[in-house]
Length: 343
Image (cartoon, rainbow, N blue to C red; front, top):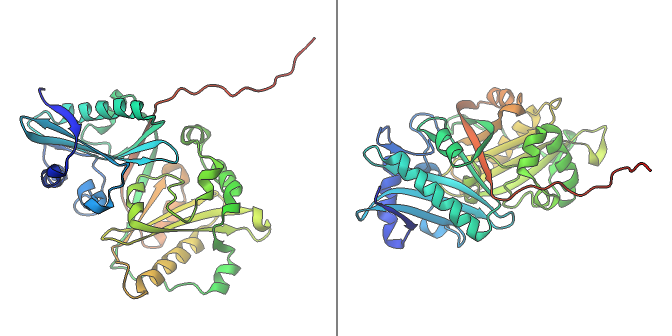
């Protein structure tokens, strides 16, 4: 291949929009991350595409140019607080060269990230279109799978909960002081290999309720279009320290689906928390009509069952399963510790 990878320019945007759109079509000569939705796929063009004003200064957009034609694009969102990069778009079109085009884009990204001090690279994708082979060849490790569930806007939302009902169920807004209990909740729910890989800190849990992306999900890119709210559910017998579940609700500001994420201990029934979240969403949508009603997306990791069954009982339907990949750009070392000595 004689082309080259370079940073995108403003003059490329029209061509990139068309390339992104074509990559979502059922075309053997086009490849993308393949994120699903009912009916046509919610590709990155329709679900994750950003208007020019929504790009942040630290976002990166690379293109593959061959003979003055753009045949590939890669877009990355960078989390400055954690030095993590997330690939949210990786598209290519061409006559049999789309796989090589995407591999060259990923390799360029990894080299550029090493120069800029990136610690981790994340990506979520379908298992088709050569995605697993591509990322494993580039050194990414598969560490989880998520079911994406969708509740269409055609189904009426439950009414908002009154304050006394939420209080009786132990549901309240999340606070910075919940950081340690939330970290313990996450560790109790998540397999230890995943806990070590994602490596969340207490400061990450303290940011709940703003633009927090903790815990991470395959739908994290749509959160910049949403106003995030976080709530916890407390077991009545355990008091303030016994957090049983976490609810994250992303209320869309643009033409995007709303976002609902649950984290709960296996013995916790999240039926009430799901109803509370959907009722809260109904209140936000009904407030002057400023929030569009484009349905609700909910990601559930495979080890978080039976949350998916509770969501299905509330009107959600499964779309597909996506795979989570991660590559670390640093080498882990063992932490120093004292050990007993024998004289």
